[in-house]
Image (cartoon, rainbow, N blue to C red; front, side):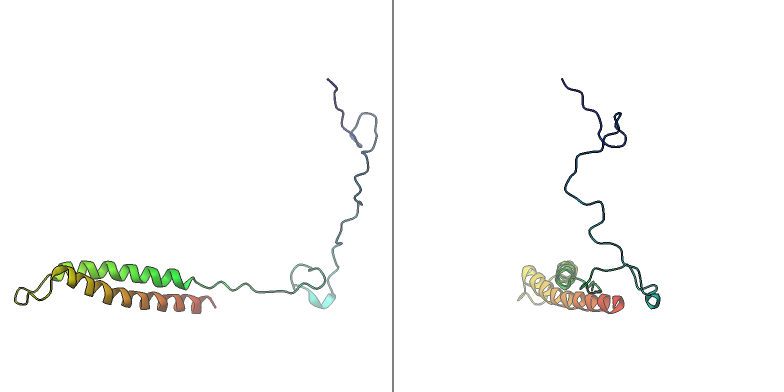
Amino acid sequence: MSEQTPAGPDAPDGSDPAPTGRSEQPADPVRQEEPGSAGSGPARPEGAVAVRLRRAPKYRAFVVTGALVGVLLGVVAAVLVGVPTQDESFALGTLIRYFAAILGLLGAVVGAAAALLAERRRG
């Protein structure tokens, strides 16, 4: 078993480590800011362009969530309303489907409107 000793200035014999092929200077030196550009942010490499990230809501998520909430409300409303006793032309299942379809579409529209409002407030 061989015992390894540290190399470099901390080594007991004071030897420097073997060269690694890298220079001691940083690859991209920090640039000095111009006197007129104080507060313009961190220095960027040459050719870099400052961009502003646009964070927009995910419309699909808003619309699908609105539609699902509308369908759920439609099912609950149809069950609460029930089938009219005088007119037996509609079964409860048909009434549930109508309410779910209509309120599902309305929920999708409300979800899309909510996404538009969220984007407008952010912008």
